[in-house]
Length: 458
Picture (spheres, rainbow, N blue to C red):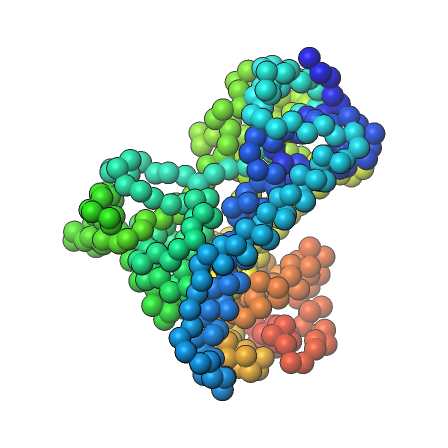
């Protein structure tokens, strides 16, 4: 048995940074990785998918070149092998960078293998038992495979296996209508595939406001993506070299038969094979590890960070988990999960930036509120770039004058949203940003104009 001050299971977003802080504080740390260094973000999530999105946007803009007075000789062609090579290079460099950082970190020992609890303070990996008073679980999550009749008899892909694709699917059908689904749908439509999105509910992006959902549906349908919503029970079957999805759609039977099948129906935590029962660590009915406001589990000396705790499914929430744990353990700074404001982006084109409460949530809260909304057609910068799809929306507490939430669906929305996030964290009144002098011509300069035309939320 080898004794350490701390053991970290998993090298996703929170793990390596935590190892850096703990070793910097003089602790002897073991970190365990059973597969690829860097976790989901580096290998199958943010970095590789946004690299693919960048390639798809180039193809999309090349097809629009004539709108800008640019002539491109011949047909625009996408070389999927080179697209994948670029993605692999960027993603691979990131993964290798994390591995190199950890293996060269003074005071840190890297174990490559599957770590499992054998007791509250002991982890077994590669037949060796490691012991520590502090153990941090950072094992992330994976794509969910729903119990659909016929699913075991058909080939299907998910966000991980799509990373191996170096060809152009003739017609991709995607089950699920949320973030992963829409990003891949638009991406492969840009590359040249026919794409169909199937959503069980009445609309895509069900957690967002209806106007956001409706506008995004309009955007993707304008690009030729077929969206089918309000479907009933599914079954799938293999028909030759194609996959058929059989469903009820508004009470009537309907089938779609496509060349490739993609599942994008949520994620599950990687907690089933950790031996959590040996440590007495509690999980909820979905397998997520239960934690308190400082990421502590029910067992003293064990923390859970990142996607496996169900407190956020984003790279930035995972990194914030690390910051909260480090602040409490090392800095005597009592930070907690409930201090953070929910914020995320949808990386379609144009992107959606979201922070805080939705309009529906504000209405349900019963508080007096103000709302401002502006179409991107009013934004000069958007006109100049030929990117006028979408709108900006903001919600204000009428009494405190603080911003409750916002949605920026339009060019630059994924970056612009941060100007609003910062004001919300400062708990400053909206007038601070309304009276700021922004630079022209930009999209952000229209935020003060938006805030100058607020109306009661009725």
